[in-house]
Image (cartoon, rainbow, N blue to C red; front, side):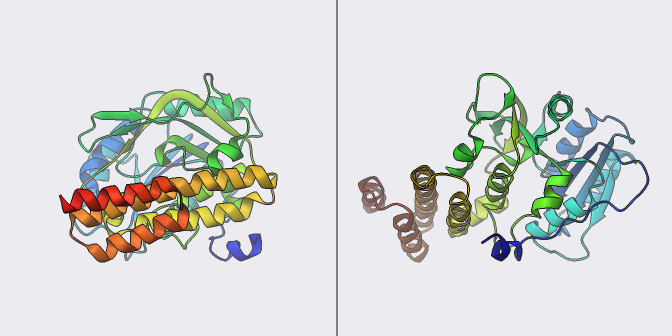
Length: 330
């Protein structure tokens, strides 16, 4: 299975240079989000550790609705590098470009509409320095609305910061961390490859975090030092949820994760983790079905109901579908 899956991952080549490398690469993929990019750059520059220690670069996927380069020049004032794809390549390929262009030993892939809070880089740098065996480190996160208002927090994984125990079991049962919260050693990407190219809108991050957990210890910082923006107008997640593609990608991710676990967990435990992950996928499918009903798109609704039952045939899912239909009828 590993050989088969590797055909869908880009090879992340080592940095070919004898020159001193920065410790950090803060790589910021962007696409039509220049208004939020200002805030993203501002929060990173407020924690700037200096040119020799921190590479900061925006990698734009050929935005068509705004001018991210102008924002980089305005906010970065020459400190932030800018690279733009010659044509739109899609977000997975854009992530790959970020990883390939990163020269630092630690890579923070920070989406152009997300944020980090004061202390993020200092805290996670300490984690890597004190734990040379870890492959990644992440912190608790805050969900924020488009205008920046706090909404809720991610699950508290443990009461004190430290290396997570049984992390593979936990992360394989469903996505438990958000993209702006995690930092990965570049050597890990070089060993395991880039993000899976089969994904179209979601699931690629969860699959990657599970892949890392099969091979490396992972550190957890209890302080919520990252902010993830939800329901942004025009966002990939929001648009694709309404079309039902989000849940389809999450089902694909579950199938890939299931293929990993037979090599790393006892059969009964692996089955339990996958069952929980599939129940979560059924929830996402029903979310998409709800959007479809609101949009009077019965075709997408039926497709998502089928996807939900593909993941979970329990009475709970059946009741949820009936409830949706009754609500629509009323």
